[in-house]
Image (cartoon, rainbow, N blue to C red; front, side, top):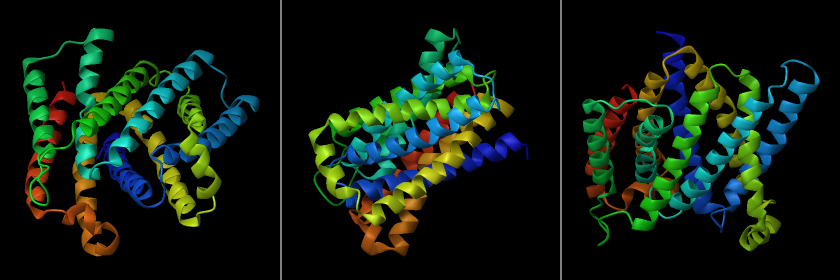
Length: 305
C-alpha cells in the first residue's frame, strides 16, 4: 500500500473522532456554542505561533512570507467554517451534520472550475447529483418526532461551513505542493486561532470563560481533540504532497460514514452518555446509512475527476 494512501485512510478516521468530541463538548460542557471554538483557537494560536517562531528564528526553515500569508488566510477560512459547523452540531445529530458538511468536495470542484480553470466531466456532474441526493436522504428523519427533515437553519450552517472549508482547500492546492511544509502547517493554524480569538467580543463567551475554564473534563476533551488534530493535519498535508490530491480527497469521503459508525458504537457501549444520539428513533438509522453511502460514493467520484 502506498504511503500516501495509508495516510489518507488514517486522517478521516482521526477527524471523525474529533467530530465526536466536538459534539460531546457542545452538548454537555458549554452553554454557548462559540465557547468551544474560542478555547480551541487559544490553544492553536499559542502552540502554532510559538512553533512557527522557533522554526523561523532558528533557521530550521527560511521564511517564505507569501506562503505564510496564504496559510494564515486558509486557516482563517477554516476557523470561520468551524464556527458554522459547531453551531450546526448544537442543533442536530453529529452524523447527519457531518454528512451534509462533507459536500465540501463538491464546492471544491465548482471553485476549481472558476479559479483554477479545471473542467468538469459529465460523470462528475452525475456524481454531484448523486451526492446531493445522498445529502437529502440523510436529512430525512423518521421515528421519534414530527420533524422529518433537518431544520433549514442547520442545513445552511453546515453548507456555509462546507463552502468555507472548500475555499480553504483551494488555497491549500495552490500553495502546499511547493511550500515549506511546516511553515504552511503552523501558519494555517495561526490564522485559525486568530479568527477564534475574535469570539471574545461576544458577551456570552466572556461570561462563560469566567466559569468554564475551571472544568477539568472540558479541558481534557479540548486537549484530546487538539492532540488528534495536531497529528492529523500534517498527515493530511503530507498525503497531498505524496499522492494525487483528487484521490486523497476521495479517500476522505469515508469520514461521514466513520462518524455514523462511531455514533452507533458509542451509543451501544455507553447508552447513558451517547444513547440519545441514536436512540431518538431507530427508523432514522437505515436512511442515514443509505444516504451516507450514496453521498460518499458521489463525493468520491467527483473527487477523482
